[in-house]
Length: 114
Length: 112
Image (cartoon, rainbow over all chains, first blue to last red; front, side):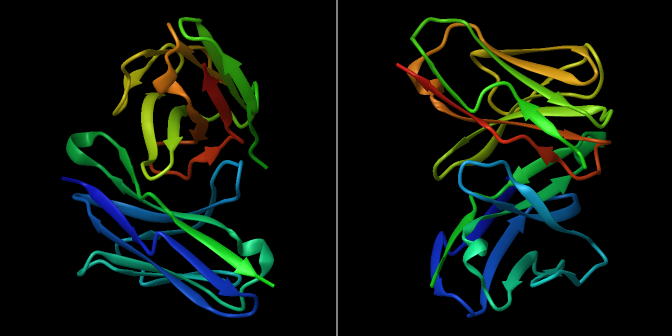
């Protein structure tokens, strides 16, 4: 069964600290993996996209990694800011039998405290 | 910038009412999607459309229908609203199947 699991479910850190969010997936065939940021009461916004051949992708203070062999991805946030408080959602795209599917994780809720 | 707008941010309806949620995108995207988002369950696909007048069922289509008469507009219809349809509804669009999805701000629907 195609699944995307994220950990931890929630995380509280102090402003200025770094943190890492995890995404494990059992999706086949794999097309790409995206990380989205969703502020409370808003729609998700894309942070990064990674294909099978990419190991690392950065977007400012956000760095995503992908290990296609172990089917794991991580999102590292450097020098966190209060505005990083949000839910972070991992989404894996798959193309079974010519169709196209998006499989969503349930997200990690990050709270950054001053 | 791509803009996806949804007709309402908050909506309160009574059980049995017919509910229309509208979504409009301004980037000439082919693909449009409707999701619902519930705590602990993540986003679940209700319906999607790859072209005008084309629609396909997602993972949880029961109790919903959709309409896409124009490329920029995708409507979600709750034929007879029920309390278990209380949720956040998110619309998204993308240029093609492999491209990034752009999401609207969401509609929080409460059915009483």
